[in-house]
Amino acid sequence: MARASIRLPPFLLLLAATCAAVANAQLSEDYYGSSCPAALLTIRTTVATAVLLDRRMGASLLRLYFHDCFVQASPQDLPLLFPWSSFNIGCDASVLLDDTPSFTGEKGAGPNAGSLRGFEVIDRIKLLLELICPGTVSCADILAVAARDAVVHLGGPSWTVLLGRRDATSASASLANSDLPGPNSNLNDLLAAFSKKGLSSTDMVALSGGHTIGRAQCQSYRNRIYADTDIDGTFAASLRGDCPQGGGNDGNLAPLDASSPDYFDNSYFSGLLTHMGLLHSDQALYDGGSTDGLVRSYASNNDQFGSDFAAAMVKLGNLGVLTGAYGEIRVNCRAVN
Image 1 (cartoon, one colour):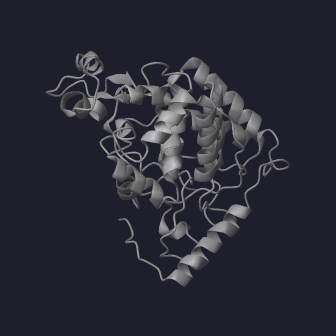
Image 2: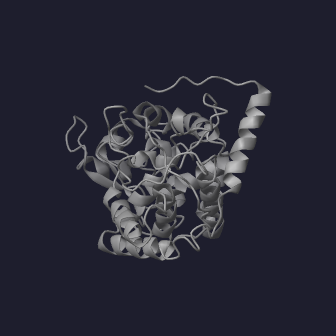
């Protein structure tokens, strides 16, 4: 069961923020430089092979990382001084954990069930790294680097991934259901969800641009193509044949960016300008609200989008992660040690 959030007085919030800052200070670019020097090359080559065999896998690995980072660690993984604190700890590989008798994990939560992919790629990387340098590289760091490498392999920007995260020892389906924004979210929903994680509106729009790669299931966009009025009519009609209004074909896929679904660029934003966002939550970024200007900027400037996306990914990846004595280094990413 999810633990209730308790609002802390300001001085404890300050202490919590200080604790998170200290934890982040333990991250470094060359964390595995001496303990596992082949770690980054192993991750990069395995991701490259996976994306070569299945172009969709790049988007799947990026989404897997997003869905990990947006769910905070379980209470037992938090610093003992703040077991009931409300500051967020994500990017802890909790999304990779299978269900156990003691907790129901995140894989079966509404936003994840039947749609998250890429677990076997992470398993393959972990197996190789356990052979090379046992008990050294965390699943959380593997996820972070794999997401970066997947974007790069599809033509997107690169960024420095600071390393040294540790893995959560539990997971929460209820937190996944409450924290992850859904495909029918409106702009206020999205802004609130990202703000809860310490991310700005610019971060939110840039990170949403990750939908320039990948596909969504019919069940996620059905309501949009039949009920929304802010959608291009021809575009909506082209999707209805594979996604009937009465139900069925829930798993049928459509590209989130109809122009270049397997290439990381700014055409996702150009699609929003012509009301061709596949999900309601996509089009919400350009629907007369406060983020319209940013969408227009990204649509006209791929470099700005790439730069802001990379910066937001760094920020997302460094928010209150588990380090030091907290969490563990899992031997198997699907199960606690």
